[in-house]
Image 1 (spheres, rainbow, N blue to C red):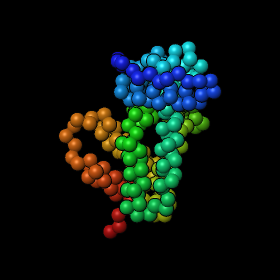
Image 2 (image 1 turned 90 degrees about the horizontal axis):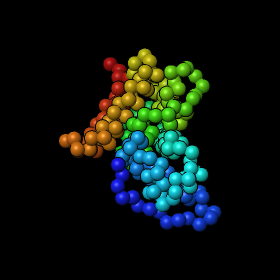
Image 3 (image 1 turned 120 degrees about the horizontal axis):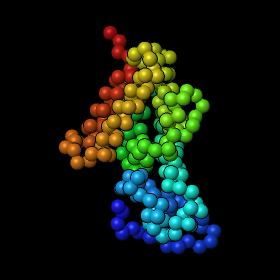
Image 4 (image 1 turned 60 degrees about the vertical axis):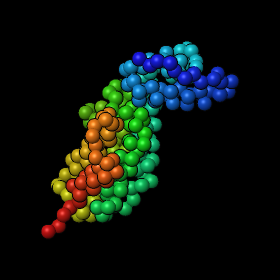
Length: 214
């Protein structure tokens, strides 16, 4: 259970938007340290320096807070991918694009946990499409679609490996997530030098995506 929590000073009237951001920041920090199910709205309110009723004026539940953090994390990832994924036609360019995802996760471990590593209704926003896609939120689909389009474009130009770009995109996504989640969840494991590990991993995944002639 969270122990002594830092309290934010009371906000004057008209500072509601700032207070909302403080609630989200406190919740993100607490979720990252104790997990979604180890934190209550009372503890979030205490960390911010407000009462539970005041917190409920901004968010109706802990799940609503988690849903907002989940969507924000994916929007940030989407923005980074859109900015960094351009014309990709070499192994180095594919590796650089994949590195964007991994760097995001390692630079924002608490946000990554909420987006990818915590089960719950915050990540299950209904989307149009097959019923089995309802387990992934709209922001999650949007971010994944950037990788999907990149792999599909490689295939369209005859540069992609394999016969199923959708399966390839999902395999690469899983490969990136596996490394990020392990590095976040198991920092005490005797990993090799991190930069060498990350660079080698993204190059391996990029090589898997590219067609090899000869």
